[in-house]
Amino acid sequence: MAEPAITGGVLTVAGYDPSSGAGITADLEVFHNHGVLGVSAVSALTVQGRSGVRRVEPVDAGLLRETLELLADEVQLAGVKIGMLATAELARTVTKFLSRAQIPRERVVLDPVIRSSSGAELSEPKGVWVVREEMLPLVGWITPNVGEANLLLGEDGSGRQEVPDLARKLQETGHRTEGTGPELNVVVTGGDLEPPDDFLLTAEGEEVWIPGRRVESRSVHGTHGTGCVFSSALLCRLLLGDGKVDAVRGAKAAVVRRLEGRPVARSR
Picture (cartoon, rainbow, N blue to C red):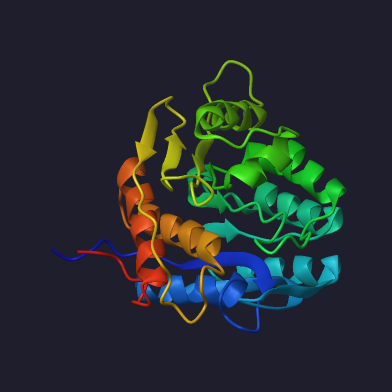
């Protein structure tokens, strides 16, 4: 059976990784492999690869704003994936764009890239504050790992038992309209857990653990960029018609395929 068509393009706002393991180029690869037209707005230039992040150079916020305005004028945007926003000014620029763009909230996925797996700081504290206080109420999905969820909330839990509570606190933070239910779906990815299970808390209150298995990477990128692959694949699966649980399972499967060195494509 033919898959439903997506009208328009899918936007990624993220940093440029010259190794293509993460960021803009990784997102665009995932979009392409799902049959989705991808467009992009670069938020930072980086010097990074599978060995880690060596340098981050944020772009001018005015340049990012103009890029987003042009894309909104010329492309019918079906959805948005947001990655690294290194400064508060950049985070606020994207927040203002979302508030004007009228893209349905459930089609906006935020991957809160705060710190690299090698330990490099990728977002200043003021930027993290803007993401938490101003951007979360505008997005429909957030996909932190355990460490990122803790950094967003100022918590320090690291075990599986703390994950559901972290997800509930994030959902509450993203709920700002009195008299309505939560609109934020939270996926706490489990790469730092053993086993690496993901936890989904839907806006409707459903709580689901998505089982995972540890995979020894055969990818040229190692484990670099798996969070980008997950969030981009999640957006594609949602736009292609998957339900929430199936979309998360599909995104997790995409990460496994990436680690195994196989094309990140929609499973049949």
